[in-house]
Length: 569
Image (cartoon, rainbow, N blue to C red; front, top):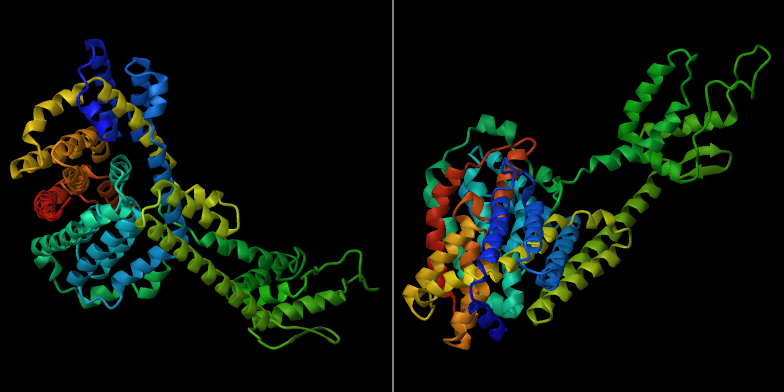
């Protein structure tokens, strides 16, 4: 690793044609990565990264074989595995429990703000910052409305704490994944090196938020107005989240009603007096009694029959005569709709239990789901333990993901569809584009000019390096910054000592992650919170660029500086 980093750092400037064409390809990638909806080419980040990669090959900056070799499969495997684990954790109600924790025995807006900071930081360290922001944003909006305060302090707390918290682990954010793989740092070394800075950073960040918004959070809410808007803990607990898409549990309810409503249709006839009204009445009543009726149906009774029987049971007066099974069907339905828990007589000597059967089935389903959720949590804990003891991170995450797929014991397609494949494709294109730009020699030339002033064995060098990382992370995004600077910063530090090389990687991880709090465009987590808040169904709110910048600049500079003091090699 050390030899490779030195070779990258000493790469000479390429021929002029390759430098110009490579710069054009990288510039197109950069514009589309930072401004995905640019008017002249609104194709998005993913397509923009593929376009940049394709141009690098077409312009012959790199060969097709070099492009394939630039894709780091270990990073993609780790990213895919953690996303699958997050999907199954969502299905096991992990994020619902986090939401309930936010409002449990709350003591006011300031208490809620601190809770959001802590929960967001911890969940981001374990489940990635993007996932935490996706699943918690709408609940944070509900909390703000419940306390009758503007939501932007809570949204800022969510996004900024998610970024800071994600810095502590290799699986917290994409740039940490890259650093962990390229540096060969174990999960434990990474965690121990950055955990103190993360904990203090979250505390300081919460303190800054409280100082900036103390008066706003101290406003007494109007009791009469709050009664109309308060959200109970039960409502919060029933709110479901998904790392990729919000769940819609009502679809299953409509499917459960079908077998109940279909027999109702057979009871009406166009020629029967008042049949339409009777059918509609039954439809309304059946919604509250459907569970009893379904329990009876599962006992083997089939509701059939019609008010007209043209071929059977016709009396001498040509009036339709009801069949024997019609009486049984109607008695059965009447007993279920009246809420009777007693045994229903179906035929002479035959009885069917209504309520006990359903209770047994419901109890069995509850125990089965509880067992499955326990298995999901145990697999996740096992994955974290395996990472801590130093096993291969990519294969550990993939193994945990496949274990959850097998334990689910059903078609995995619905869960796998929630994986962000566009992000994986974006990484593939970015790997190729950045590798092509490196081969032009421009990054090496610029680093050679900066490196003497950015060595981490003195305070001035750390300040210069920090400013370079802060600026590049907000101009070119943090992942490309890590790909461009990582090997060079490590090679420079390795010339000082082996311990300084490790410290250089940790500094890069800390600064590039916290730099995301500087502006709204500095981190994908910020954009996720902004977009989720804007699209929220009932609690929509637009977080502006300037309201974020007013908090982001002082928070980023203070938290970054304090964290650097706590990082040791």
